[in-house]
Image (cartoon, rainbow, N blue to C red; front, side, top):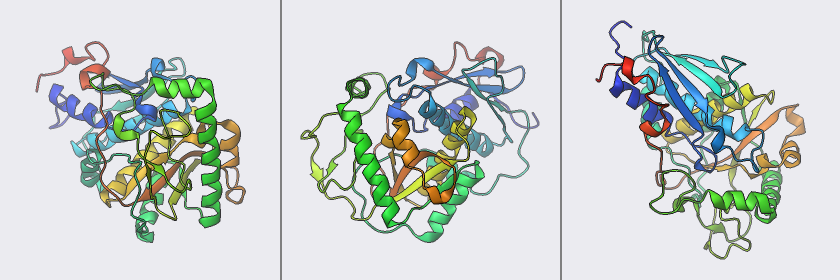
Amino acid sequence: MSVLTLDAIVLEKLLSAAVAAPSVHNTQPWRFRLRPETSTLEVRARPEHLLTAADPQGRALHISVGAAILNLRIAARHLGWAPEIRLLPDPGEADLLATVGLDRPVRTEPLRVAELFEAIWHRHTIRTPFTGEPVPPAVLDELTRAARAEGAVLHLPDRTETHRLLGLTAEAERRNTTDPARSAESRSWLREPGAPALGIPDAALGPQDATGRLPVRDFAAIRPADHLPPAAFEAEPRIAVLTTANDRPIDWLRAGLALEHLLLTATVHQVRASLLHQVMEWPQLRWEARDSEQGPEHVQMLVRLGYGPEGAPTPRLTVAEVLDSDGGLRGLPPG
């Protein structure tokens, strides 16, 4: 591979970037294996990390893995490769969600890659109030271009449509906290202090909106949420709607790439994000989240955008914990 060497140190850098991606309930439903004979990195699902109640089809799992693939692609480009990404490369292997070929050097580093790579380490979802300062139109335009680059569409609904979507989110949140299977599953993913770096950390148990206008997720699934202090959230939330033309597993992966691309782009501009996923977990409500004026699109995520603190890092599994067996390391130089 020209002047590039894929050694153990470089592999650790690549996978450290990949696992920094967001995932539903911080389930981190990914694993990796290197095929050194072909310089190919396999990205596989971890079915044991599937949320069987909230995500029985694995849509959110695919979106989570798609976000990790985007980070992996950016890291590879930043380190000098022109990675070749193949999504769902083998229909006979359901858990093989992507392969990343690392056998060609990049001629010139693509625009913004260095900034996006740096943003990987600063992108943290937050669930606290935003300042209310509007995100500039030029930044919103850049976020829509980031989503479009990955085959998805980012819509910016008006005030009336935003309030309708927040109403659907409130209904989904009510169902999540009253459905026994959903609430038990959510609570089972709450991370205990000192436990392995999986699951929902304490930092995700943010305050509730004192007005009830913005339905922040209560992962403990307790209503009324007296254990969460009330706070004054922004009066007019900026909600963005991420959609795809189709609704197949490959579209879910593309939605994950698009989601992470726009989140990293937002981070470059110091724009914070909070993910409103509740509606996506109820098929009828997800269908109702469509804007009929936008055509037959499929909503994959609602993203709240604004300004606020950077947020606390979420615990992540180590590279050793996500690399299959020896991960092909026997074929690599030590670095």
